[in-house]
Length: 306
Image 1 (cartoon, one colour):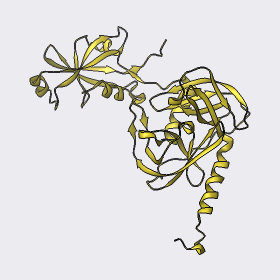
Image 2 (cartoon, helix red, strand yellow):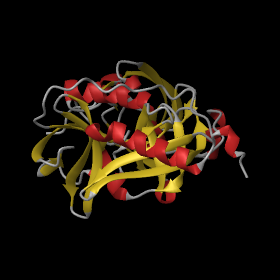
Image 3 (cartoon, rainbow, N blue to C red):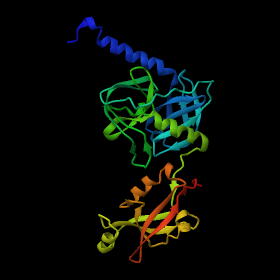
Image 4 (cartoon, rainbow, N blue to C red):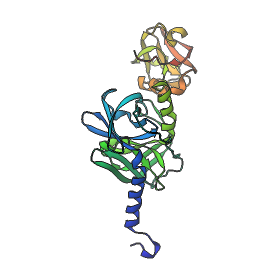
């Protein structure tokens, strides 16, 4: 048992968690944008709400309950599915931009408070950082600056709320992770993505202008190209105005390398076509009629959907 003379008690921890929640409460909102219920969000700047992209089932008919309990209609500014970040606009009085805190000091074992707002009131979950790793790619190809998992199961109504350290500093946004556990989208990712959504309504992604599907290639061809696996990506369509067409890629070509990287799956290409790829020139290794060649392609920005 802890020595009472040290000042340690569960009451101290309890009061600290409650105080942290009260401190962030004026920033927390409820998002009514899903058929199965609500989610959370937080006021980033005056009239701008950051929330979890996955929680928004549509671009329209989104209502936000503000911290004072009033409801306003929200319009979608932009959404970035690859990083699970969405930006909404509402009517709001003047507000200072939220202060994020970097996550480089977050370690496994640290206590984190996940704070959100449900229709019935504020919500909170106190958990331990179960995993604190480096940068990673989401399943949808987004660059997430740090992998931070919390040890507790997560209520989907709290998704899109904030993650606070024990000093009350915002280190990111809480979202649903594997097996219903809480995952933190770190502050560095939000600070990078949210301004892009405000400026363009989306995060730019790279574009080859090629339709691809996996295919098996001849082992002799794979061996000659130095591939460990007999797999590549066959070009099934070519956009007439795309970078691939400009570079001379033809329907029926088989892509096997992106610079020095093998291309065993379409997902791998999607991952490589992240925001940082726009404007880059890459050497694509290609098999055409059994012969190996390399073509230089300048990656363009993916056109905005019509």
